Length: 133
Image (cartoon, rainbow, N blue to C red; front, side, top):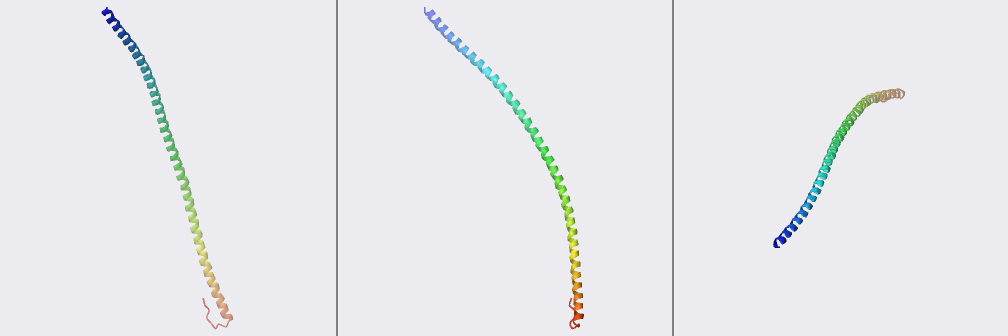
């Protein structure tokens, strides 16, 4: 019977080995399923990331286009303001020149009237003192 005992022990070890191998197969299958699920999730994440990257690139291009358009509009507006300011400066210079000419004429006229008044006063007063201008 010692052989029977040895065979029983071997059978018990074989049964335990088969049980462990089945647990191993189950674990490997669960691992394979999880790996495939992760692969799918990684692929979905990669696709989403690429979509986001494309969206951000397009958004950046649109923003740059809007900024260029705004810059051109602003340059156009500022250019228009610059022309208006130049025209206003020209008109102000003309008005200043006219005012200066009018002031000179007024001063000359005042001097001429004052000289005429002194001549009249000198004639009325008998001419004792010379007229001052």
